[in-house]
Image 1 (tube, rainbow, N blue to C red):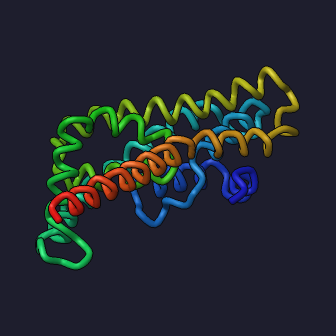
Image 2 (image 1 turned 30 degrees about the vertical axis):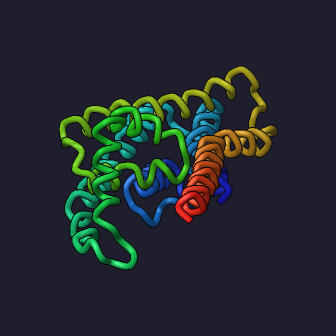
Length: 210
């Protein structure tokens, strides 16, 4: 999706709706986030959008979206994992998620804001794992402010430094997308590497038993 086209078509209200959906509705994982906010900030530097409205509305939409995701996960998630012998779901997945969020939950909620797709699912998983509500709210607000204000102001600052920055918008968006997905790619490679290592260890163990 073209962030600039979306902004031109739906304006500030559209930006807030997209931020809310990407943050709290599972079906919104494909929507642009970082590139949308950066573009909005850049356009605000040119007077096309109202910066104060963005700086208030974007973090608020992000925070509310994560709240919806958390409450959905907390209410619906445990029921999905109720049967340990389910072909799709396993009770141990809930236990693993609960353990992970008890150890790294605060950091995850904040950092997930800056990773596409992950920021959509993180609050739901936090709810499923029954992360303490007060802890979630605290770091949800911190993450929402850092992401919503930081990325938007980054675009605004670039627009002020380079008055015709919209001419370079698409290359900049491309770089943002690549950088945003680097953590996802790195994690996928790590999991794949560990999976292969685990398979080799298991194979050697079976050979030793024989």
